[in-house]
Amino acid sequence: MSFKGLKPIVYGGREVWPIIEGGKGVAATNHASSGAWAAAGGIGTVSAVNADSYDAEGRIIPQIYEQLTRLERHEQLVRYAIDGAVEQVRRAYDIASGKGAININVLWEMGGAQAVLEGVLEKTRGMVTGVTCGAGMPYRLSEIAARFNVNYLPIVSSARAFRALWKRAYHKVSELMAAVVYEDPWLAGGHNGLSNAEDPLKPEDPYPRVKALRDTMRGEGISDSVPIIMAGGVWYLRDWSDWIDNPELGQIAFQFGTRPLLTHESPIPQGWKDALRDLEPGDVLLHRFSPTGFYSSAVRNPFLRNLEARTERQIPYSKVEAGEHTVRLDVGVRGKNFWVTPKDLARARAWAAEGFTEGLRTPDDTIVFVSPEERDSIRQDQADCMGCLSHCGFSSWKDHDDYTTGRLADPRSFCIQKTLQDIAHGGPVEKNLMFAGHAAFKFKQDPFYSNGFTPTVKELVDRILTGD
Image 1 (cartoon, rainbow, N blue to C red):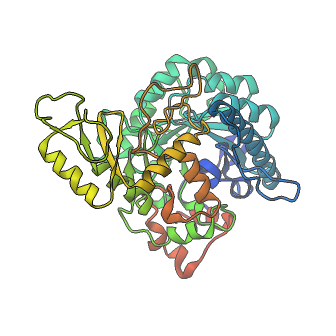
Image 2: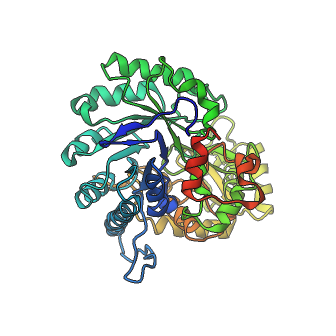
Image 3: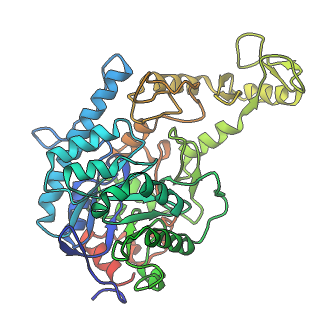
């Protein structure tokens, strides 16, 4: 028995429940969870972002980059990404056994996104029902979908973003656009689509934003039977009862990103699963440290707090004596041409006395103060860059033309590939980026998880369908 009014939808030629497993970045969603979600009658989503592949014994192949140049490492990264995602799709497809559907998720801002997507779809024909894609403006998604005859499901955070994609490209391949994912930029985990017009500290009610998206879709002649998938902040379907069968919104489906992390099939390590049970409201931070330049949401653990503290140890400087910049900086930097205010000189000296003796320049004409160990770690990570993003603020890499953003590498950011690979494969949760949606505190409150209970994916899907 499903929750009030929730009916199956037809997707990929078969009836499925309108509940979707969100495809979570580097190795946090794999074949085991996605295949099980599809087998339970929903839409499972394999993450095609640097997914794991396996050796002949079934062990995960470590992604190691021994090439000398960034470009060679980037080419290796693309090979790993295609091999891993193909393997994950094949395994998920087998587990699903003809039930539900398997999607793949890619980030348009990942390095080599188009090459990876084409490489995966070429080798998984007939297995992938659709491609979800966000993080940037993936104009070329529709033409790639047309080439491989798969559905595409753009991820947007506003009606305005959808209109731009539709007008420029998607109207030409309207028949393959199976749904539009509305990802709440204040509530979703991972990278979010907050624009400069929106205030990160003032969350907006998703209902009027989704209604505006539907109005835009109707204005372009898109049928109400094309679902809008609500993503971000979705926990209990009973909280969304007035969205279901609502003529203002048309067909609505729901995406669950955070809840599937805590299942038997979820591939994340036990330490990460245990940490999810202890979160309180406010423990997930919407921040801007990501080298993508996007806002993103992650658990405010010691890793993230360290980035917050690092950014606060920051002062502006001038290369010439000008305005209030009347004194030379005499700590953290070599050379005499960094002019700062007297007040900032006092702050810099205090930080140096605390052990933050190294000043690193940022692209914004500021100097940030770190310890010698942090400096060495930052520089090593920047040197080891394997080009995992189309544009990286941390290393100044970009994946085309002259392979540089032309901007100074930013020491206030971090190597996202390194930390996501580490946490997904058993690294310490307190020393790595731990993505989660803002509703993650409900693991502690929801009686379903009491006494340490961890459901199977099937048990979770069955529970969600009751409204709880």
